[in-house]
Image (cartoon, rainbow, N blue to C red; front, side, top):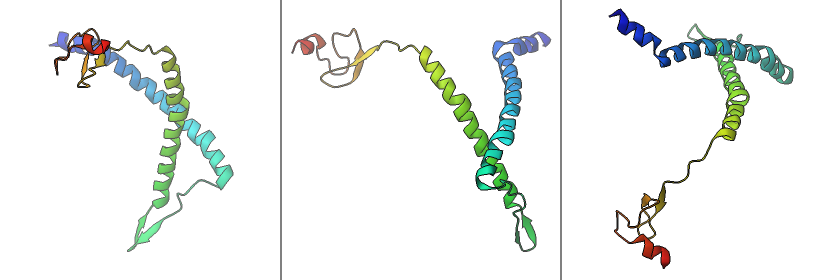
Amino acid sequence: MLKGFRDFVMRGNVVDLAIGVVIGAAFGGVVASFTADVLTPIIGAIVGKPDFSAMVWTINGSPIAVGKFLNALISFLLVAAAIYYFVVLPMNAFMSRFKKEAPPDKKKCPECLSDIPIDAKRCAHCTSSLASAAKA
């Protein structure tokens, strides 16, 4: 029983996931700091103090902290924008430089327009001869 557990824990994907969670938590701190210490003050300088926590609605004597929700929503949008523009876009650009396009393995039949293998001499769907279609 312990051998099975050890094998499960030592599988590559479990270890990779654990490393990813630790790195993600550390990166989350960096992004949160970037949002709180860089982006939020810039927004505050442009539109005034970006703290809505004092905004409270009262309905039948019950306080509804709308301002705290707005702060959390703005923080989420700033974090999402920071991750997208500073991580996702640069990573996509970096990966697209190394992406190799695979040669096509299918072509369209000139008669029925279905996908067929590149080396096919006859369509499996409409049985038209592709060699004669190519000559015509």
